[in-house]
View 1 (cartoon, rainbow, N blue to C red):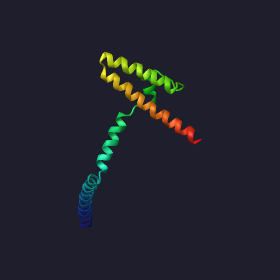
View 2 (tube, helix red, strand yellow):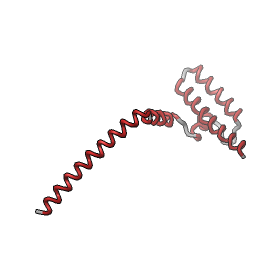
View 3 (cartoon, helix red, strand yellow):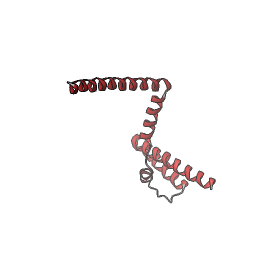
View 4 (cartoon, rainbow, N blue to C red):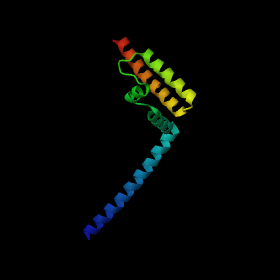
Length: 116
């Protein structure tokens, strides 16, 4: 008899806890959408998915880590123009993303040398 009562209390308690968790989750989503956190998170995810890794960017432009920024710009201009003439927008956008990626890398390096 006591075991049956304890089992019923456990089942009721877990049901109450499950409803409370669901309600708290819904409230958290509502609060996030009101404050704009949800939209900001989605934008950050989209931005991160568009970012290119440095090794991939170097491979696309055909440069090494020792390449100067001027050399990178020459390669970028050449590849960008070639793809503009031949009509490959996809490759043109990959070249542009590669330049953007390396630009941030070189800006960080430049800031690091100024701070030292």
